[in-house]
Image (cartoon, rainbow, N blue to C red; front, side, top):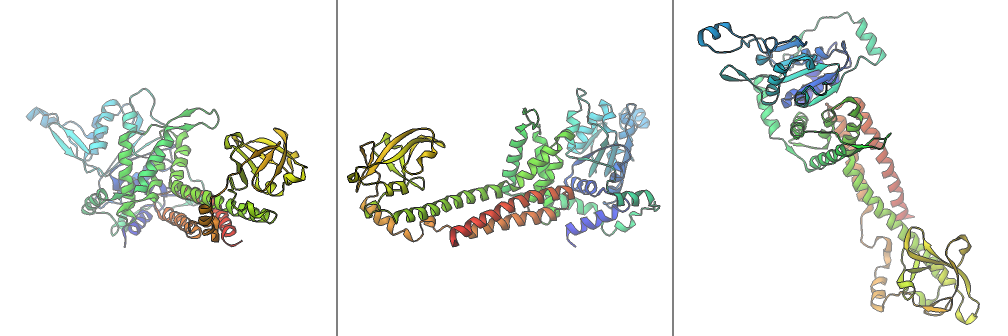
Length: 514
């Protein structure tokens, strides 16, 4: 049995009788394997303490400690009472820590923000360095996971920011939402929960230590680095949709470092030696500071997962659109040349549809190619009416239309004629840019496929993008640490991208086979 399957089976056992808490249990397991802590925010009575109690049973021989904080709580309640005998005999201030937090593998602290400064300061070191100073010595804590709970955020101005920052995994717990699960929960009369069924699945101390070393050796793919930079930049510059104000979400360097360790743990559980983009999804549960930011952070994380695919598809789409324009222009030009004279063959086509006047308005004036072919010869002495106007999409350029010119309200009317080589605008002779003889020879050698002269394999590229997207979908669905609701949101984003890929396929089909 692989580690992923074993963890899933273990979570299934310890989750028996706990309804709609799969995500909390899974994130708690991930935090424990990474040696990090988790906080659950939510109202009373939604099984937050049950999550910590059940997670204790994931570890063989694990000891637990649980305490409900109040403003009257003292360090003695958490870290153990002072040893009177040690104080009398050796004049040493030591605590009797057995049975308290310093000897526990899994700890649950309810109403965490009600703890006093003395408790908070000691917790900072316990969470970060996993050590506890007891008298003159430092005790290495066996702590695998600390789960805290509260129904509120830490109050501002009370110095709780440092402790809040130590809780890497943050999740908002709710009551049971699904009606069927709700009825199963309230009518369930089975209060018996026996951890004995987990004995064959439990993680031993030796395994845990070995796994932690393997997790530390997990590499990080370059795509993960790009995704982290993308998220970091997004969170620094967030625009409020209602007010338009720009603000940022602060994420400390320490939190980023710990978050990467969480990605390594996720990769390890899924049997990979390198963390990849599918592991990035767990950052949605790490980077927010208050519940109102959850949606913004989740959106940034999900967008980062598909940013590379989106960029690759956008580049392909631009290339396809350009090639399609060129093909359509070539078709239009071929049709117009049916009316053209042989001497027009070496004229250079600009912007897909225009010839450029090299001696008029410093070379920024263009005439519609098919119009030029149809102009009356100067010997006929009856000029065509035309219109000279500024291009609405490029103010530097001027365009000349001879037929259908009445559609343009701005600009000026002009009289147009031509001969074998030149265009005449209001009687002024203007040269048109043409290929040289050598350029024409090179051009003719490439006429087999003007719109795909570089031999670019559009079909292979679009299928590779689609394959990459499907692979991402499968990896995200396979990741056991992503909430099912978030997986659905990711699938929705991927579906939108796949629809755009389908349109690109249609454009490629037109390009290559129409």
